[in-house]
Length: 251
Image (cartoon, rainbow, N blue to C red; front, top):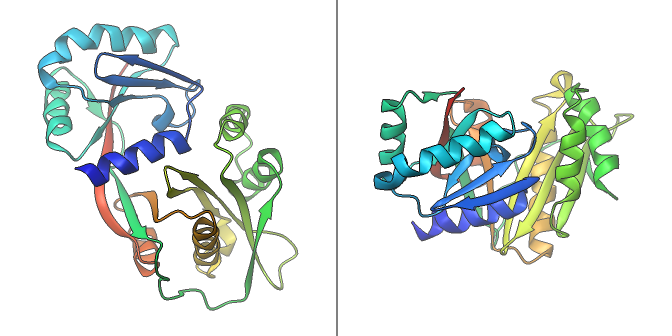
Protein backbone atom coordinates (compact mmCIF):
# COMPACT_ATOMS: atom_id res chain seq x y z
CA UNK A 1 0.00 0.00 0.00
CA UNK A 2 2.71 2.52 0.96
CA UNK A 3 4.71 1.73 -2.19
CA UNK A 4 1.65 2.37 -4.37
CA UNK A 5 0.88 5.65 -2.63
CA UNK A 6 4.49 6.82 -3.07
CA UNK A 7 4.41 6.12 -6.81
CA UNK A 8 1.02 7.82 -7.12
CA UNK A 9 2.27 10.98 -5.41
CA UNK A 10 5.34 11.07 -7.64
CA UNK A 11 3.21 10.49 -10.74
CA UNK A 12 0.78 13.29 -9.90
CA UNK A 13 3.68 15.69 -9.35
CA UNK A 14 5.44 14.59 -12.53
CA UNK A 15 2.47 14.90 -14.90
CA UNK A 16 0.81 18.13 -13.72
CA UNK A 17 -2.70 19.14 -14.66
CA UNK A 18 -3.52 22.71 -15.65
CA UNK A 19 -6.16 22.82 -12.88
CA UNK A 20 -6.48 20.91 -9.64
CA UNK A 21 -9.10 21.10 -6.92
CA UNK A 22 -9.63 19.03 -3.77
CA UNK A 23 -13.16 18.03 -2.79
CA UNK A 24 -13.55 15.90 0.32
CA UNK A 25 -11.38 12.83 -0.38
CA UNK A 26 -10.85 13.52 -4.09
CA UNK A 27 -8.24 15.30 -6.17
CA UNK A 28 -9.98 16.65 -9.28
CA UNK A 29 -7.77 17.40 -12.27
CA UNK A 30 -8.57 19.17 -15.54
CA UNK A 31 -6.48 20.07 -18.59
CA UNK A 32 -8.99 20.96 -21.30
CA UNK A 33 -9.49 17.29 -22.14
CA UNK A 34 -5.89 16.32 -22.98
CA UNK A 35 -5.08 12.90 -21.45
CA UNK A 36 -7.39 11.14 -19.02
CA UNK A 37 -4.72 11.20 -16.32
CA UNK A 38 -5.09 14.97 -16.09
CA UNK A 39 -8.86 15.11 -16.64
CA UNK A 40 -10.15 12.79 -13.95
CA UNK A 41 -11.03 12.40 -10.29
CA UNK A 42 -8.33 10.65 -8.25
CA UNK A 43 -8.91 9.23 -4.81
CA UNK A 44 -7.10 11.09 -2.04
CA UNK A 45 -8.61 9.20 0.86
CA UNK A 46 -12.08 8.86 -0.68
CA UNK A 47 -14.52 6.37 0.87
CA UNK A 48 -17.31 4.53 -0.88
CA UNK A 49 -19.70 5.52 1.93
CA UNK A 50 -19.27 9.17 0.88
CA UNK A 51 -19.74 8.61 -2.84
CA UNK A 52 -23.39 9.70 -3.01
CA UNK A 53 -22.50 12.94 -1.25
CA UNK A 54 -19.38 13.54 -3.37
CA UNK A 55 -20.78 12.73 -6.81
CA UNK A 56 -22.79 15.95 -7.35
CA UNK A 57 -19.72 18.07 -6.57
CA UNK A 58 -17.46 15.99 -8.79
CA UNK A 59 -19.89 15.92 -11.70
CA UNK A 60 -20.40 19.68 -11.42
CA UNK A 61 -16.62 20.26 -11.55
CA UNK A 62 -16.34 18.43 -14.87
CA UNK A 63 -19.60 19.79 -16.30
CA UNK A 64 -18.43 23.36 -15.71
CA UNK A 65 -15.40 22.57 -17.88
CA UNK A 66 -17.44 20.72 -20.53
CA UNK A 67 -15.64 17.47 -19.72
CA UNK A 68 -17.09 14.01 -19.07
CA UNK A 69 -17.12 12.96 -15.44
CA UNK A 70 -14.21 10.53 -15.25
CA UNK A 71 -12.75 8.55 -12.35
CA UNK A 72 -9.27 7.05 -12.25
CA UNK A 73 -9.31 3.98 -10.00
CA UNK A 74 -6.52 1.81 -8.62
CA UNK A 75 -6.31 -1.91 -7.90
CA UNK A 76 -6.66 -1.25 -4.16
CA UNK A 77 -9.59 -2.37 -1.96
CA UNK A 78 -11.19 1.05 -1.38
CA UNK A 79 -10.95 2.06 -5.04
CA UNK A 80 -12.34 -1.31 -6.10
CA UNK A 81 -15.36 -0.75 -3.84
CA UNK A 82 -15.84 2.70 -5.41
CA UNK A 83 -15.49 1.12 -8.85
CA UNK A 84 -18.37 -1.29 -8.13
CA UNK A 85 -20.52 1.56 -6.82
CA UNK A 86 -19.84 3.68 -9.92
CA UNK A 87 -20.75 0.74 -12.17
CA UNK A 88 -24.10 0.49 -10.37
CA UNK A 89 -24.64 4.21 -11.07
CA UNK A 90 -24.12 3.86 -14.81
CA UNK A 91 -20.41 4.68 -15.12
CA UNK A 92 -18.75 2.67 -17.89
CA UNK A 93 -15.24 1.35 -18.33
CA UNK A 94 -13.75 3.46 -21.09
CA UNK A 95 -10.45 1.76 -21.97
CA UNK A 96 -8.16 -1.12 -21.09
CA UNK A 97 -6.46 -1.14 -17.71
CA UNK A 98 -2.93 0.23 -17.42
CA UNK A 99 -0.14 -1.49 -15.50
CA UNK A 100 2.21 0.60 -13.39
CA UNK A 101 5.63 -1.03 -13.49
CA UNK A 102 8.58 -0.20 -11.22
CA UNK A 103 12.24 -1.09 -10.77
CA UNK A 104 15.01 0.02 -8.42
CA UNK A 105 17.79 2.18 -9.83
CA UNK A 106 20.51 0.90 -7.52
CA UNK A 107 21.70 -1.66 -10.06
CA UNK A 108 21.74 -1.92 -13.82
CA UNK A 109 19.33 -4.17 -15.70
CA UNK A 110 20.98 -6.25 -18.45
CA UNK A 111 21.16 -4.13 -21.57
CA UNK A 112 18.60 -5.21 -24.15
CA UNK A 113 19.83 -2.87 -26.89
CA UNK A 114 22.29 -4.14 -29.48
CA UNK A 115 22.36 -1.39 -32.07
CA UNK A 116 24.53 1.73 -31.59
CA UNK A 117 21.85 4.30 -30.86
CA UNK A 118 22.42 7.84 -29.60
CA UNK A 119 20.23 9.43 -26.92
CA UNK A 120 20.14 13.24 -26.90
CA UNK A 121 18.66 15.58 -24.29
CA UNK A 122 16.98 18.59 -25.89
CA UNK A 123 17.15 22.02 -24.23
CA UNK A 124 13.47 22.72 -23.67
CA UNK A 125 9.91 21.50 -23.90
CA UNK A 126 9.07 23.25 -27.17
CA UNK A 127 12.01 21.73 -29.07
CA UNK A 128 11.13 18.28 -27.74
CA UNK A 129 7.43 18.61 -28.57
CA UNK A 130 8.26 19.38 -32.20
CA UNK A 131 10.06 16.04 -32.36
CA UNK A 132 7.23 14.26 -30.56
CA UNK A 133 4.65 15.63 -33.04
CA UNK A 134 6.75 14.49 -36.00
CA UNK A 135 7.48 11.03 -34.59
CA UNK A 136 3.86 10.42 -33.55
CA UNK A 137 2.44 12.19 -36.63
CA UNK A 138 0.03 13.95 -34.28
CA UNK A 139 -0.54 17.56 -35.27
CA UNK A 140 -3.84 18.16 -33.50
CA UNK A 141 -4.75 21.39 -31.69
CA UNK A 142 -4.40 19.60 -28.35
CA UNK A 143 -0.63 19.91 -28.72
CA UNK A 144 -0.95 23.47 -27.41
CA UNK A 145 -2.33 22.01 -24.19
CA UNK A 146 0.44 19.40 -24.22
CA UNK A 147 3.04 22.18 -24.41
CA UNK A 148 1.49 24.04 -21.48
CA UNK A 149 1.63 20.85 -19.42
CA UNK A 150 5.26 20.20 -20.40
CA UNK A 151 6.21 23.72 -19.36
CA UNK A 152 4.64 23.05 -15.96
CA UNK A 153 6.88 20.03 -15.34
CA UNK A 154 9.27 20.07 -12.36
CA UNK A 155 12.76 21.35 -13.08
CA UNK A 156 14.21 17.83 -12.94
CA UNK A 157 12.95 16.79 -16.37
CA UNK A 158 14.79 15.26 -19.31
CA UNK A 159 13.46 15.84 -22.84
CA UNK A 160 15.08 12.96 -24.74
CA UNK A 161 15.26 11.75 -28.33
CA UNK A 162 17.02 8.73 -29.80
CA UNK A 163 18.39 7.97 -33.23
CA UNK A 164 20.38 5.21 -34.87
CA UNK A 165 23.96 6.07 -35.80
CA UNK A 166 23.16 5.83 -39.52
CA UNK A 167 19.87 7.75 -39.33
CA UNK A 168 19.57 11.41 -40.38
CA UNK A 169 17.24 12.29 -37.51
CA UNK A 170 15.63 10.96 -34.34
CA UNK A 171 12.85 8.39 -34.60
CA UNK A 172 12.13 7.93 -30.90
CA UNK A 173 11.44 10.25 -27.98
CA UNK A 174 10.41 10.25 -24.35
CA UNK A 175 10.42 12.13 -21.06
CA UNK A 176 12.06 11.45 -17.74
CA UNK A 177 10.78 13.37 -14.70
CA UNK A 178 12.15 13.09 -11.17
CA UNK A 179 9.85 13.90 -8.25
CA UNK A 180 10.10 12.64 -4.66
CA UNK A 181 13.32 10.78 -5.57
CA UNK A 182 11.46 8.68 -8.13
CA UNK A 183 11.97 8.73 -11.89
CA UNK A 184 8.87 8.56 -14.08
CA UNK A 185 9.06 7.70 -17.78
CA UNK A 186 6.38 9.35 -19.92
CA UNK A 187 5.44 9.86 -23.58
CA UNK A 188 7.73 7.05 -24.79
CA UNK A 189 7.19 6.94 -28.56
CA UNK A 190 8.85 5.35 -31.59
CA UNK A 191 8.05 6.17 -35.21
CA UNK A 192 5.85 3.41 -36.65
CA UNK A 193 8.34 2.65 -39.45
CA UNK A 194 11.28 2.26 -37.05
CA UNK A 195 9.92 -0.04 -34.37
CA UNK A 196 11.59 -3.29 -33.23
CA UNK A 197 15.02 -1.77 -33.89
CA UNK A 198 16.05 -1.16 -30.28
CA UNK A 199 15.22 2.55 -30.23
CA UNK A 200 12.76 2.30 -27.34
CA UNK A 201 15.17 0.20 -25.30
CA UNK A 202 18.08 2.59 -25.88
CA UNK A 203 15.88 5.55 -25.01
CA UNK A 204 14.72 4.02 -21.72
CA UNK A 205 18.27 3.00 -20.80
CA UNK A 206 19.42 6.56 -21.40
CA UNK A 207 16.64 7.98 -19.24
CA UNK A 208 17.37 5.46 -16.47
CA UNK A 209 21.02 6.55 -16.51
CA UNK A 210 19.93 10.18 -16.29
CA UNK A 211 17.64 9.34 -13.36
CA UNK A 212 20.55 7.80 -11.46
CA UNK A 213 22.51 11.03 -12.00
CA UNK A 214 19.57 12.88 -10.41
CA UNK A 215 19.84 10.48 -7.42
CA UNK A 216 16.45 8.88 -7.98
CA UNK A 217 16.24 5.50 -6.27
CA UNK A 218 13.21 4.05 -8.13
CA UNK A 219 11.89 4.22 -11.68
CA UNK A 220 8.30 3.69 -12.79
CA UNK A 221 6.20 3.86 -15.94
CA UNK A 222 2.65 3.19 -17.13
CA UNK A 223 1.73 0.88 -19.99
CA UNK A 224 -1.51 -0.60 -21.33
CA UNK A 225 -1.62 -3.94 -19.57
CA UNK A 226 -2.52 -5.99 -22.65
CA UNK A 227 0.22 -4.41 -24.79
CA UNK A 228 2.29 -7.55 -24.39
CA UNK A 229 5.16 -6.43 -26.61
CA UNK A 230 5.72 -3.25 -24.59
CA UNK A 231 5.30 -5.06 -21.27
CA UNK A 232 7.92 -7.62 -22.28
CA UNK A 233 10.33 -4.84 -23.30
CA UNK A 234 9.98 -3.18 -19.91
CA UNK A 235 10.46 -6.50 -18.13
CA UNK A 236 13.75 -6.98 -19.97
CA UNK A 237 14.73 -3.58 -18.60
CA UNK A 238 14.06 -4.78 -15.06
CA UNK A 239 10.53 -3.43 -14.49
CA UNK A 240 7.85 -5.42 -12.68
CA UNK A 241 4.14 -4.66 -12.31
CA UNK A 242 3.19 -3.10 -8.96
CA UNK A 243 -0.50 -2.25 -9.53
CA UNK A 244 -3.05 -1.32 -12.17
CA UNK A 245 -5.45 1.54 -12.80
CA UNK A 246 -8.44 2.13 -15.07
CA UNK A 247 -11.12 4.70 -15.81
CA UNK A 248 -14.87 4.89 -15.48
CA UNK A 249 -16.73 7.68 -17.19
CA UNK A 250 -20.20 8.97 -17.94
CA UNK A 251 -21.38 11.79 -20.15
